[in-house]
Length: 587
Image 1: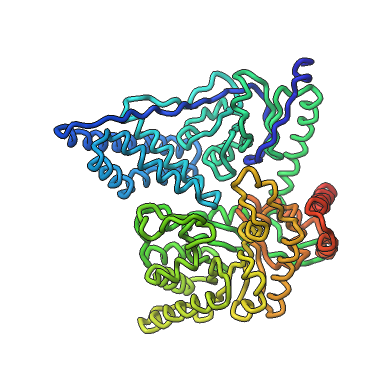
Image 2: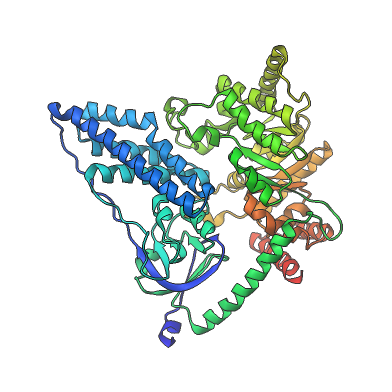
C-alpha cells in the first residue's frame, strides 16, 4: 500500500450518480468502425438496397431484445431509453436520405448511411440543451449497430466482467450501458458524457456511483489499476492511500445516514424553521413521468417541456395527440398547478425529419427558435395552444411562453392565444377562461423590461441556464470557458433581484426552473432574493426540501443581502456553500 500512497492521483469530473466505490478498473475501449467506400455496379443496386433493409430489420430485432432484457433487469422506465433507438430506425428522413445519396452517388450503402447519420449526429451534438445533446448518442449507437450488421462485424459489450470492477471508458453507448454486468460492475467513469447520459441513468438504476466528464482518464489508466469513485463530489482517486480509504469509509457511512434523513424529510411539508411555506415543483419532459413527480412529493409541475413530444418523432404531433398528453398531467395534479411551456423548438433543437422548418444558422442559440419559431409557424403554434387550452378544463393548467424578448412579442403570442380561445368557444369546446399565462425570463432584454412584461403576465418563471449564459456571454458546453459560468456572479444576482422586485410590484409570483433551483447551495440565495417557487428535476427535490426545512427565511434574506454587497463570485459562492453546510450538518 505504500506504493499506492505515493502514486495517489485525484481527477475531478461531474458527479452523476451518488455513491462511493473502491475496486479495480475494467478499461473498456471501443474502436471506430472502418467504413469502406466503393462504386456499386448498376446491376447490383437493388441488392444493395435490399441489404440495407435487412440490416435495419436485424438491428431492430437486436434493440428489441436489449429492451426486453433491460425491462426485466432494471424496469420499464429504463427500458424506455430504447424507444428513441427504435424511432431512429423508423425515421423515414434518415432512410430516404441514405437511399437518395446511394442513388445519386452509386457508392456502397455503408458509406452513404454513414455520411447521412454523421450529419444527423453533428446536428444534435451542436444543440445547447444537455438532454437533447445526449440524443446524438442514440443516433450514434443505432448507426454503429446498423454498420456492424452491414459489414458482418460483432460488437463488444460489457455483459460479462470477470470480477467486481469499476468500468472506465471514453464513453458508454446506450447499448453498452444496457449490457453492463449488473452483478459485477461497481461504478462507471467516462471521459465524456453528462448527467443525462444513458450510462448515468443505468448507474442510478443499479444504485452504483458514476462520474462523467473526466477528460482523458481512459488514456491514463490501465486494466487492474485500483480506483476510488466518489459519485457525490465527482472525484476519482487513482491508487488511493490507506488514509484516503479510511476517510472515505467514514464519509460513506455519513452519506448513507444523510440520504435516509433526506428521504424521510421529502414526505414532509417544505416549511422553513420560521414558518414560511416554500413551493417546490417538478420539471418534466413527458406525461409518463407523473409517477416520478409523485414519488418525490413535488407540489405539481413547474415546467412541462413540450418539445419532447416533437423531438421523439419525425411528424409534427396533432392537436389531439398533444391534448391527451397535457390532459394526463393536468388530471394527475388536480390540487396543484401544472405549468406547460409552449414549444421551445428550432435553431438549437432541430426536429428530425423536418429540415425545411429549421434553416442552418451560424448561431442557432440566438436564432430562429422558441416563440420566434412559433410566431412564424402559426399552424403549429395554434394546434399546441388549443391543446393546452382544452387540457385546462381538466386541471389547474398554466401556459408559459419561452424566450420572450419584449412586450410586443408577448402581445403577439397573446393575440394568437385569443384567436384559439375564440375558435374553441365557437366550437363549444370547454376550457378555463381564466387560465394564467406567463413568460419565461431567460433573455437579458426580458430581464431589463421585467416591469413592462409584468403588467401583461400572470407569473414569471426564470430560466437561469440561458439567462446566465446570455448575461455572461458563456457557452457552458465550451470546455475552454465553461469555468467562467458563475451563477453567483454579481450581475446574475442583481438581475434576479430586479426581476423579482418588478414582478412583486405587479403582485405576480416568480419561480425559478433552471439548474440553480435544484442545487442546495443556491436555494437559500434564490429564496433570500424573493423567489416564490422553485422547480427542478424530481430526484433533486429531497435534498432541496431537507435544506428548506433546516433554515430560516430570515437567514436566507440576510445571506442574499450580504451576497448583493459582495463583488466576487467566488466569495459569494463560498458564503452560500458555508450557509448550506452549516444548516445541513446542524440538523
